[in-house]
Image (tube, rainbow, N blue to C red; front, side, top):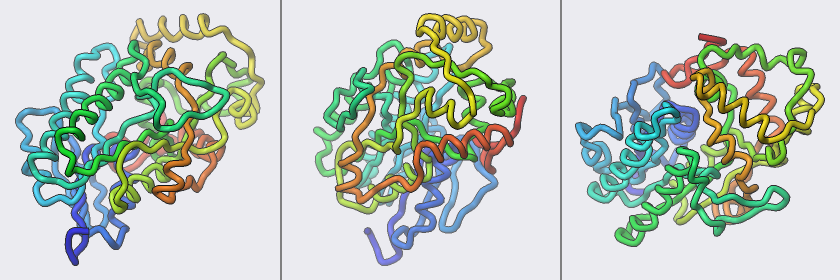
Length: 342
């Protein structure tokens, strides 16, 4: 750490699902002297040792170098999931904004960059066994989210070559959930007017069982713990993060008391594409295609080099998230504000 007072950490995207958990853990870390949270809209929430700045990483009017000067690490989490109908807009924020962050890290002389990559960066892979961090990261090209995450993996390859003195860590988590993120994620993927109480088991007697729909989940706080460890440990490179067991229709059926019913991929995709085309559903059919192809990840490297293990099973994570959906759960930041519908 940089001084007796502790390290100074800057977190972009600090008010979202992952950002709030990362900021909270860093603010509680005795080795951290101060946390600076960057977000487009300032929150009411103010944890210890934390100050805030209203910053849009994609804006050319923002002086990111000034924000990063004196920092011991930058944790880059800022990301826009919408508008899915305008991939140029998300590209400006997610790709060009991230490149601005990387360049500012180098210009400000920050020694450590921890970047939020994703399982979505991976090329299509197996559903019956796991892959490690050497699996190709070319994404699924038809899905904007995967395309952007994969592009930034290539950008960081060049960044590491050009700046060997900067320690770069790439986190590749599974799907991240917590109770407080339920309202935000319902709005992002299900739409503003999808009522959270529809997640009640008695309203879901049947559950679509779609071939290939087998993914991994992780509690956001467990992912945040990995970010915290990566800031303090001299590690580099990529780390897979996921909890067991994999989530599929059988597991969800047990949680919801619903009977899985086999549904062809083409039928499910057609329904999603129709709803997306009518602007009734924010989640695109292209992301659906990608999810069916995502590999299952092996997390041995995070366990051995970060000494990290999830504290909650994927089953517990989904249970907590579903309860949050039903209750309209949220938090005191603009992205996470809670409400059941509308």
